[in-house]
Length: 614
Image (cartoon, rainbow, N blue to C red):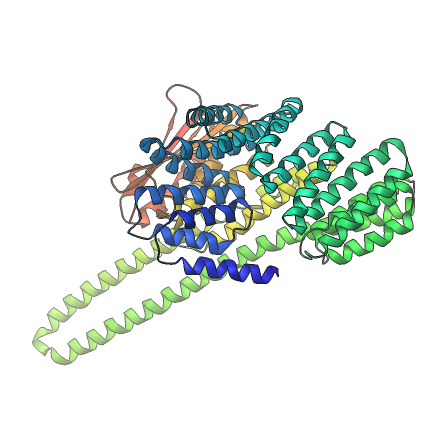
């Protein structure tokens, strides 16, 4: 059935190719993204619609909006904010208060998730003003829900509960089971966090009923699992086996449904293992432990979660042999994860080395062909020229020799520059890797597996991005800034979040169609962090600005670190020389725009340069 639905979705998207954006198409694409059903085919459709020359300004603004909510759904907040703002400009100009409010709600949600509460509040209250003016109940309900989310992110659970309970009458009036299920589930989470398990269960049951009404088996399995977790918490607080039995019943129902999704994490099986361990039923816990291992496909990430729980209960029950066994297994899995990261990095380096060798071989063949061509020309000249032209031949040969010698010198210089370019791409040095892995290891000692998993995921993504981008001659500005964002976030992990950052892109800069050489900004950010921000105790700030004027992109990297007086001349020269060589080899004279200076009004430094777009 799932395959059939996927095929239908693909057919729908393909059927839209070559058309402009109608209202029905917009609504269909919007619903697919909102329900989490969007995949690469939907994004491809949006991109293909962008290329249609018959699009109106309104069509383009709505396409920016669709792409923004897609990026927000996959948690790419940087891209989402840029696209939301592009769409917002049009609807403000046209005076469309309803659509403007929808965009501001999207921005408010992203800002809240990024803990930018002032910006989130600003967008939310602007949206509220529009909703009051147009008297739109649906919009009003969404604003209340966003306000509840904002309170929740700020840690104000009391006000979050108040706002969420206000929403229910609206969605009951609209007969919207999907949103009612979501709101009830959010209420259940809030009550569970407050220890009000009975209230949490009541809302979980309501969420379950709504989920059953629109036949979403995954959501139903999640509701069963959430109910079981509340009963497990009640058992852990009271030691009442009555609650444990109910928790087991709900977990079993959840586990059965989750098995329909074999490639998703079956946390219900993990919870069953936890219940039986808490009850002292070690044999039954082992049964679910084995079943869970079978359903993880030996994934080190999931095996790590299993062994951590098993180790915890072995220690609690003073089972020394089991504790040592699980500790050994956990250590083995962690080593596998570390080896995977190292292997991915090694593969990246090997690929870069192979690419470099391949380029040298091509250059050698080209040089040999050029030499053969010149030799053939000289042979032809010797045949057709008479003895009286010997002097001329000598002069020509001498000039050819000079030209050949200069070509060799120029090619050697290009090879040296390309070598520096390749070295520049190898940003992931062993010292950096060691420090990041140490930071990740520290989270293990804090017994915070979620944070550890997040850090490992981010670091793995950074390695993959370097692997993907380094062999490309040019990439889109969007790809480069995405990789740069991940690099800065990884550095923040390394330095314990002692500095913040902002990447500002002027609205007229087209991120998707502006192409630049990969990772030109990363060494400048690394220099700012290593030699500027690293030496201040707190409140560090790094800003990257991108603007456009007359066919050129202008870049600035600004920090509030110790400034140039704290950095040696050798370090400054080394940090800029490779970038300058990369700019020079492009032949547009951009290397002359590269500069580094102290900031005029405060501590820190500013590095700037421009890049001509071809």
